[in-house]
Image (cartoon, rainbow, N blue to C red; front, side, top):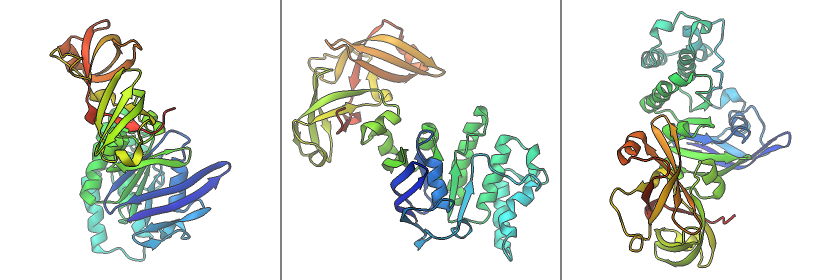
Length: 366
């Protein structure tokens, strides 16, 4: 178990404020945020390169707050991998073990498993300068894992890898962590990487963790406007809480001129009648109906017109203008095959549905 408890730190005018992170054994936790949000500073604080102003750090139940980096049981892979240029791949991988007084047969057997798993056997006598970006990443991972660290820390692990190789390396890292059950912390600015690798995810903005939780919860149910906007959710509308009953909340939307009843287990804890809120729904959760429905009978159904279409490879993004007095815009993401089957084109008329199960509420109204 890895725990950061109320960690505060500063470099210049920038501060980390009350950072709370807990990583279970064998879990992969991803901290995601934009450039300048404090991700790398947080890692440097965790591994012991930066002092704390206050707070405590625990690894496997032992406090390491005041320990030097080499005594924390952490293996760190920076963005540029930092392989030793004058050492072969074999020497790089065994570097941590060579620092020990003695390496056991089990240690050497474990390194052999890593080499086999990462397909490094044919590279062992090469030097880093003769490796591709993906090969250097694999060697850096083997070196980091060879000592069986209590925590593996990866800083932007795909930043130096060609885009064409990133998917292969992502899958390899996911398989590697699952195979060796390594407790891992990854920081990245890339949302796709975060949701692909992380079992739990934390969003950091301006030196603060603004939301943390399981991957699925983070994806569909952001808890603040800042989190929703960082996650790229554009379908956000002002609303008002009308009334609450057990596990349900009814809201009215002036922009959409509709009333929605939404399942919400914690409605009474988070909201009150009359409160101004925002409601949102991810673009891929908006449905395009193939069979006509009556909007007067189905309050989640809207007549709409395709105002713009953006094509990004196999994904289409549709900007639909609702046939309401406010002409609200709704963004819809769908696969190319579905768009072709429906026959979508700019100017086309369609019906869309906002499923209440996929609607989330935000306390912020501004």
